[in-house]
Length: 210
Ligand SMILES: C[S@@+](CC[C@H](N)C(=O)[O-])C[C@H]1O[C@@H](n2cnc3c(N)ncnc32)[C@H](O)[C@@H]1O
Image (tube, rainbow, N blue to C red; front, side, top):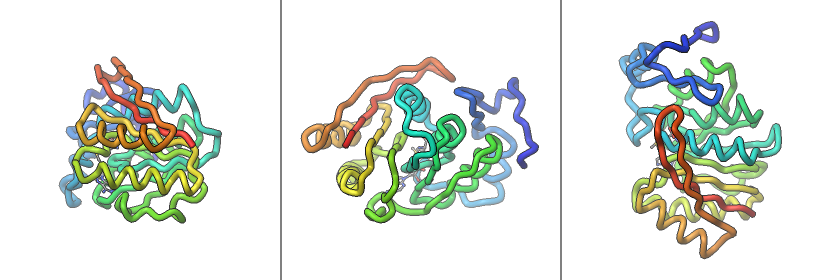
C-alpha cells in the first residue's frame, strides 16, 4: 500500500495542505466498504471543519514531537496532517472502531504512523490524557448529549495538563452550548474561520487554553 500514489488529477481524491484524502467514491474506499462493516456514528467521510482546524494548528503550531489527541478522528484527516506537517505524535480516538481501517489507509497513503484507540469520549480517563499537549476534534459535537460529555472531557484534560483544546464545528447548536459553558468555566474563546480550499467551508473554532 505504501507504494500507492494518488494522482493529483484523480477527481475521487482531494490534495490539500500537503496531504491527500479520498472521497467516498474512490475505489480504495469502496473496497473497504465492501469488505468491512460501515462506520456508524457519521465517520463515513472527511468532514470539512477538519480543514479549518488544520489551518489553526498551522498558524499556532504545537511544539514539535508533542502529543496531539485527535478526538472523534473518523477517517483521520486531522491525524494525518498533524503527524505529517506538524510532526506530532498522534493518538487518534474514536468510539467506532469501524473508522480505523479508513484512518490507516489515509496514514499509509500519506506515509505516516498513527496510534489508534477505540474509546468513547466519556471513557477517556485522566491517565489517557497524560502527556497530551493538544486535544483537537473536528465536527464532534453534533448531538445534545455530546455537550456535557465534551465539557467534562475538556475539564478532565485541563486537570491532566493538556495545554490547548481546539474543537471545530460547522455551527451546530450543541457546539454553541459547549462553547458557552467553556467560556464561563475556562480560558476559552470562539473564532470564526473560512476557507475556499479544497472547497468553500465555514467553521467556528472553540479554543481553550490552560
Ligand atoms: C462527524 S464525524 C467527524 C470525523 C472527523 N473528525 C472528520 O472531521 O472528518 C464524528 C466522529 O466522532 C465519532 N464519535 C461520535 N461520538 C463519539 C463519542 N461519544 N466518543 C468517541 N467518538 C465519537 C464518530 O464515530 C465519528 O467518527
